[in-house]
Amino acid sequence: MTQTESPIFPVVPELRVIPRDVHGVSRKQMSPNALRVLYRLREAGFGAYLVGGAVRDLLIGGEPKDFDVATDATPEQIKALFRNCRLIGRRFRLAHVVYGREIIEVATFRANGGDDDGDRQTDDGGRLLRDNIYGSIEDDAVRRDFTANALYYAIEDFSVRDYVGGYADVQARLITARMSERLGQPFVVENRAGAGGSIGAEAVARARPDGHTLLVGSNGPLAVNPVVQARLPYDPAKDFAPIGLFSRTSHTVAVRADSPFRTLADLLAAAASAAAEPVEQPEAR
Image (cartoon, rainbow, N blue to C red; front, side):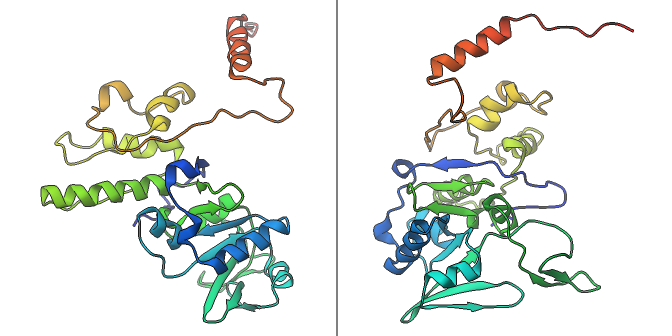
């Protein structure tokens, strides 16, 4: 597994939405009790996501051992929604919704970083004693231990939300497992998230060209980054050679709701018009 953050390569969360017709995860594979929790939270106006190992296991065709839920509702708000709920923990406040022998653990999104204020406390040695500062789903994704555990199944549209490259991590592990069987060689998957995929792509571009280091590439590092990043540390056309295609995903261009653009043609026309306008140069001093 790959950790989501390191002191050398801090992770900047970037949302990738994998729609239902691409990821293949079905509600039929989920615990009915987990679905009850997700729907109740959603109906109450909160964000509700299946998260962690359950999503990872479902993506690779496995059977999850348990089902955890993440939400922007606080533990007290969760308890108010479920009569069969109990709050546990002091260091990490969690809600357990109990259905007989099954417990659905519900966690509030936690903030990433911060000082010893509010309900976060550390001892003199820096050991975390209490951490109940809540944040956004992006914060929560970066805090999780491994990228493959930072995948969120959204009950609102049945998509999988990926903020730190976890989906590519899962795909890479699937394909390398088959490659290992066929070639009789072990493979190590290292997910270097951040900078829209440029950090991982740069690592492969600088690796020895002996065929032992492979890049699971996508539109981000290979097509988008060259036009949005001024100083890309690699050349997609010269530094990489494609050897196979094993996944397809859908992409959407979105604008703000109050934007004047209603079609892609509108947006492209405005971009072309802006590009044709002369750029004012600052006066020489």
